[in-house]
Image (cartoon, rainbow, N blue to C red):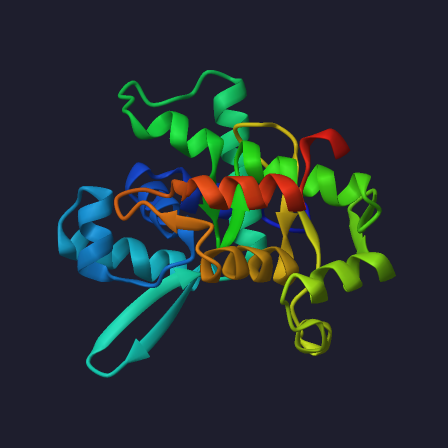
Amino acid sequence: MKEGPDISRIAALIGDPGRANILTALMDGRALTASELAEEAGVGLSTASGHLSKLSDGGLLRPRKQGRHKYFQLADDDVAGVLEALMGLAARTGQTRVRTGPRDAQMQQARVCYNHLAGRLGVQMYRSLQAQGYVVEAGEAVTLTASGTSFATAFGIDMAALQTARAPLCRACLDWSERRNHLAGSLGRALFTRMSAQGWISRDPNSRAVLFSLSGQRAFDAAFPVGAT
């Protein structure tokens, strides 16, 4: 018998269409109830409950109880990264959904990926940070430089809090639509939160699309210039 990680079990968990829909619905970082996820997956509540139990037991979801309600979230950034990479593989190999809609272009332009910015603008931000010397990518490792720390602080981010947290500060996440990396990790989340607080962005309530205001787009391009990429 071969030893080592059993990828077949993880693949089987993700491979069921209902479970895949549940996982995709949680890619925006929200915590949802079983009934909300049943609707997202297009299955009955009892079926969704079975899926959620398997996904939780498999370490892909993190259940949270608050009051009378039980919520579910993706377990961590690693799960989100795997799902984003699988979306990219599906897109590259032609495994796409037949139905398209007006939000598809918005999703490719900017979307939320587990509480950080993805899509064309997410890639622009990451490449601009690299070009300005704020982050350095070496293989799988992404490091924030001293000038990057100064930039983030000036941007309004509490770097002392981020640097003492357990979560990785910077991570590269392969963008499924752009097929290039965007910035994940606690810094990616903090930048997304700060842009939202400043009114640069808002979230489409019916999808993962992120919408930029006109002033927000101008401010974003000034902070993360295309010319720097």
